[in-house]
Length: 237
Image 1 (tube, rainbow, N blue to C red):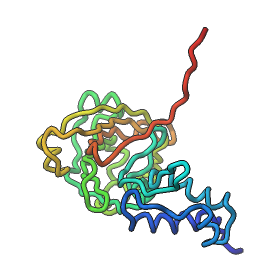
Image 2 (image 1 turned 90 degrees about the vertical axis):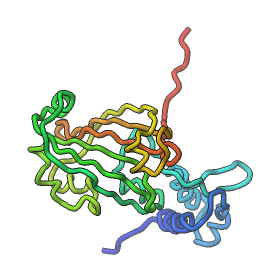
Image 3 (image 1 turned 60 degrees about the vertical axis):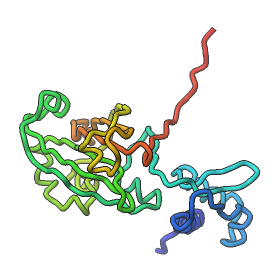
């Protein structure tokens, strides 16, 4: 049996590679040019470009064309990818640097959120193309994850490691806030103290609905954003 790869996917991957080498606001080939280059219909070319638009890699200007977006790492608020997958979708190289990994007694808040008396704390600097993007502190119920997280998390995806251990991050709730960088943030993220950070605190549950991860991620505001999809509620009466 022969594997089938959709044509739009082939074009998408080719464009992703090009975008990675282009400067912000550089033009991409028009739909008609893509049709000629790849021998596909306009609908197929449009589908490939739309995937890049959705991932924030390019933007469209009506009547002018499609252009490379400024380097960023936005994601949509309605879903969370693993950091590694999120960055790869943007055409960027993800990496991490573990700065703390230890087991300790849970605080009162951690005990309430994770239903655990002992927790495993994992602090990492998350990088994209070698540039620090966030400081992340993830707290887990120690008895459930300690053996699973003995791997090298500088190189391995935390998400994939959990899934391989049968702990599948499935649902969550998050709160966002704007905060100033502390002296510790500034040192780790290579920003000035007081620089604006986007702070996300989230609780993630596994496939059985059990609390799995309580995380605080402190993103450099100028390097990361969260896009929000919403419905408009019409006025009544």
